Length: 391
Image 1: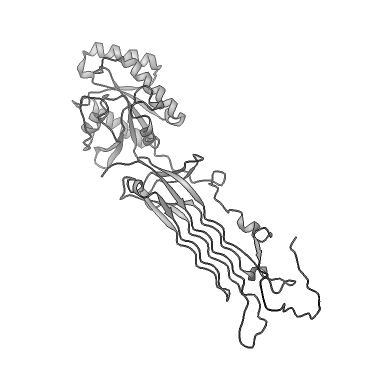
Image 2 (image 1 turned 45 degrees about the horizontal axis):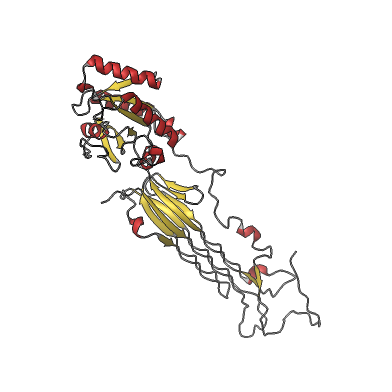
């Protein structure tokens, strides 16, 4: 199945049902009180993580989703039925972003987690709600509010422990093939990898981690060159990044400049990603004499101002890969995955009609039905007609 990691959809939550003006009518009960019921709330729109899905391709074909409208209220104090919610099943690791505000509306990082992305309209109030000691025959009601409408960009972010980045043909896919059972395409031309791929590395029984390989970056990727930086988002949830550097590029380019290019593109994309733990891995060390390879590596380290450890491997010959994977596994044990923070009150998403019930009785949304043919049936037999107005 084709891998699709981004889709744009429009969602519309259900409208709220209207309140109703009704009075109790029964034999021998000539002047029953108000019994108009409230409407039902509109259905909400949710996204739900499903571990059985791995692509957003379904949302490329259908782009509009709506929830059910709440039913109107009825006489006899009958409340309208609530509209059914609409649940969009998405792969685990998907987030929903409002395309107009770039606000992250919600994201699901585990199977079965459900997050609201559009809120249904509130129900309207029936005339029973307006009964008071001075208004015993209210003819007021409120209408249900409209459901929220959003245009969302669904983004699938792969869940991996280790993310690999580097220029095309740096040996990233070859490394994954050599340390896992994944079989990404490998060839001697740029951009062999067109979509992200995952590989599970098992160093010893019951100790494993997941590696993500993304298409290579080139200079100007932040401005759209090559495949751009659209795949860098898949590295956001990784715990450590492997910066793979080819010390003998097939295009005879400068390895030092290549390494600086990746750092520059990473910083342009995201400060958060640029500050993640990053390891330097020098690949294809078997193609040069040891002294010449060490000289190139030292030049790169000096240019980057690198003061931490670095690793020399030959992915195709599996030289140094086992030791690197063992150190990565130890690093994973020392650096547990960050616990996903729940949305706090300060960071919560604002939905429409959050304050609706505070204002519903204020008078702005109240509708008075005056087209009644029956006589006013107050107990007082005076000739005056008193209208009570809420302040």
